Length: 219
Image 1 (cartoon, rainbow, N blue to C red):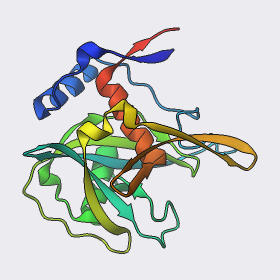
Image 2 (spheres, one colour):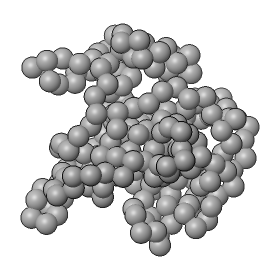
Image 3 (cartoon, rainbow, N blue to C red):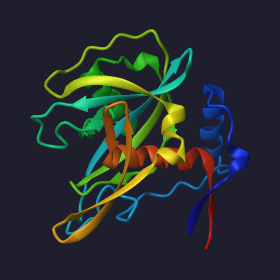
């Protein structure tokens, strides 16, 4: 099975078009949703990990006058997991959480102070499993300005926004590899104005691209 771009689906990036794409996919009319397992498209090829910690992140699409942007966080350097990396707001699911959507919205409020009243949830992307043992459910949401942020400076060093058009351009989906523990690991990277968007975060962006612009074909 392979994923092939469908040029007929390429439309202006508007909130209405995004709503339609998620609505179509939910009704079975859009790209087939499949969990992303341990493959070359993951941040790292998994080795001995057999169980995963459930987590959820918010992929925040900000409705700016000049076009949609994606809001990212830069993690602080002292954190145990993914220190200093660019990420989406989110974290592990607590047993009290009702759903991955609840987790993503709760963690977003805790990390950057973005109230859930500003978030219109469009839908979910396939789970992404990381070599560090997390199974991440990405929750895509439209963010309506104006809004105020209040960062948890223990976890978040800063936030920044990147044009969605840049992130969904496949020419910006760089493929890299690195040898870890004697094995070749493959990952995506999308450098933007001094920020290195890579690993799980970049792979989730690529998953989002396929969700919007791709159809499923069988080899």
